[in-house]
Image (cartoon, rainbow, N blue to C red; front, side, top):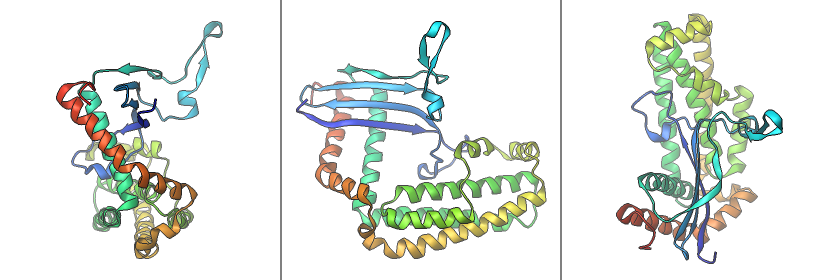
Length: 293
């Protein structure tokens, strides 16, 4: 396909934090895949080849592995639907396609901006640091004396923002810098398994108290955990400021091989790919098909 501009777009849509409302999308705990959507776009033929996975899985080998059934038959080992194989042509696009492709465009723009726009990268980091400091301030206030449920909520908030900090370090450019920070943090406290952490997140204060009791967490144990994670988050803030933000203007000097290759790809293709996505989204939203491209 000579007109192929976007070989493949894989989009993963994630759940938000345990149903708790009022969250900035940047603060969502991106740990639990709900959808995989596959688009293979050919502009010369004006055709989208489309497949999707609809379900809920941790995307582990066990979750998606083939299993043997009765009589030696084989089937997908996950407990829900998996249909990304055999993608089919799509000549018309619905609102769902527009939604997913818009999300893809946002993700592509965000990822590229982290690498090519120092001001965007700085703001992204500072926003996360502000969130960390807000959680720390709240935790210091609550630890002195409160209900079991509030202590549990505070402890979980600290665990979540700590895992989010690892995710942020994995996302931002300059692996020569971020790996060193991650290694130092891991020596203090390794990140919590995100799937275990998701199960710990309460919906409200009453559920927080029940979860604390179910897990056998008493006041003293929760206060001890809060103090420990306050210390490690303070260290994380300091390390990010001193070892990353201070060197942000020279972040390209710390690219690894994959990042240098990715940067070359962005410089060649980013604008063209984003404009192509914008055309698809605009056309699909207006006409519902690719024939107007």
